[in-house]
Image (cartoon, rainbow, N blue to C red):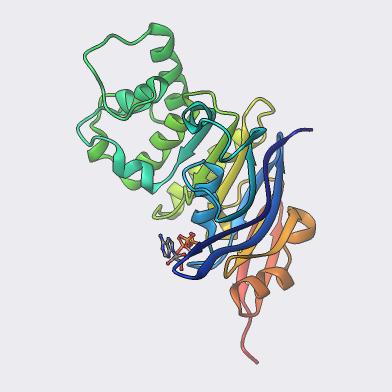
Length: 263
Ligand SMILES: Nc1ncnc2c1ncn2[C@@H]1O[C@H](COP(=O)(O)OP(=O)(O)OP(=O)(O)O)[C@@H](O)[C@H]1O
C-alpha cells in the first residue's frame, strides 16, 4: 500500500506558538481516518496541510506521493476533494445545487455561460442521488438547510474523482435524524472499495461511520494517539485527549462517549 499522506515532524508556528507540534502521521491508500480533538487542538490546521493550502513551518509533508513545496499545488489540488465550512463560504448562494456540484469538475466555484458535458452532468446527478439530494437539483445553494448543504458539499468534493477525500466536521449542526442519515451515507462511502482514502475531522465519536478504520487524536497540536480504531479509540486515550474522565462504548458498529462522574 502506498502513502496517501505522509507527515514527518511537521510543525506549524504562528506568533511564536506551535499550532501543530512535531506531528508525524501517515495515511495509506484505502484507509479511512477520523481526527478527534478538543476545540483549538489543531485539527483544521492538519486538514489544511493535507489539502495543500497550508505549508508546514518545519518538517516534511508528502501528499499523494508529492512533496509539498516541490510540487505545483494547482496540479495537486484537483486530486484532493475537500468538504467543509470554508468551501461553503466560497460558493455562490444563487447557484443551483446541480451547478454547485457541476462546477467542481471545471475547477471553479462559479458558473460560466459555457455548456457542460452531458457526461459531467450525469456524474453530478449520480453523486447527488447517492447523497439523497435528487429532489433539490434546481434549488439555490443559499436556500439549503445545514444538512442539505453538507450533503451537497460532499457530492461536490467527489466530482473530481479525488484520490483523497477530506471532510471537515460533516455532521456539525445537523439534527439527530440528519446526523444519522449522514453517518449512514458516509458509512456506505467508507465501505466502498472504490471510494477514495478519507480523513474526517469530527468532535463526536457518535459521528464515526462504520467503515472508518483509523483514528488520530490530537491535543494542543500534539498527537496523542494514532492507529487502528479498535486499539486506539479507548476510554483512556479519549479521556487524555479531552482532559476529563470519559467512557467510550462500542456497540454494534458505532461508538458513544459519556463523561464519568468526577468522584
Ligand atoms: N493564522 C493563525 N494565526 C494564529 N493562530 C491561529 C491561526 N490559525 C489558527 N490559529 C489557532 O491555532 C489553534 C488550532 O486551530 P485549529 O482551527 O486547527 O483547531 P481545531 O482543532 O480545528 O479547532 P475547532 O475544533 O475549534 O475547530 C487555535 O488555537 C487557533 O486559534
